[in-house]
View 1 (cartoon, rainbow, N blue to C red):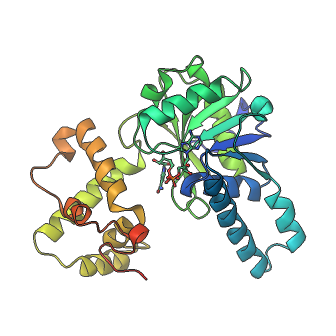
View 2: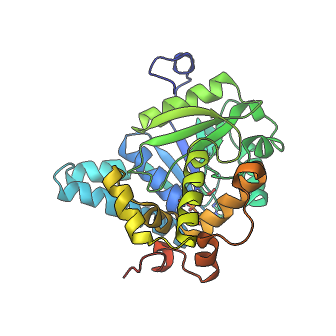
View 3: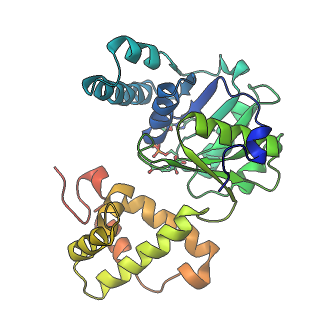
Length: 294
Ligand code: NAD
């Protein structure tokens, strides 16, 4: 964990104008958080309705602040104007840092990162919000891999304080410094980690999910496990957290972890999480997971 004034931040180049690629759950959240803390951000997607959804979500979050008397309507309008929605790369020439947050598909990410590298300046920092794809793997197709690193936010972006800044083999100190500085400007706590499956947080979280899954497979009542973990002091238990994360995301991330760490993470047979996924109980995203939602 790098504290304020660390070697990284001393070298940070200013991050005044940013951009996010993808206006989905994460892209929309990143745009809101950046705008809310005063850093202008271009929000690019390929679909009009995705942009509309991203903006709607940001408006909703700002409106809540107005309701709670934390913002005036004028301040809300001003902050909202920090988000500039776009379907083109037209204004990317003066962007200092880009966060790629498009779908979790290596081919799509490769294409998008190559595209954006072609339109930004030589010193622009490119980052990816990928949860499971290796940063070194994504850096391979880039002309300036030294300007690239991971910037992994957690969902929901406006509530989760941690950001993993993932350093690839070729990432420069300057790129890490700018990304750390931007995370702090967004009011987040950045940690700098190396590139490996699961980075840091998921290397802790997924063995925990695996342990929970085994308990359920052996007959434990998931609601009881949740209650126990809440009493233990965690804000929510593993079943509820899996519903928030989504069974599809969890299954996919687990596959990546199992490939990276077969001795610890690979399992014979189906896990309870896989069974939930097979039965289309994805969690909050389709209103049914371990729990049922309205
Ligand atoms: P999402 O499906 O909600 O949003 C993806 C968006 O990308 C869509 O709006 C889509 O239209 C857009 N898009 C697709 N191709 C594009 C392109 N070429 N240019 C611009 N936009 C394009 O996905 P999400 O949940 O926001 O995830 C985005 C990224 O964040 C993924 O890499 C995911 O692994 C990562 N992530 C997700 C979570 C989570 O809990 N959802 C948490 C951390 C990280």
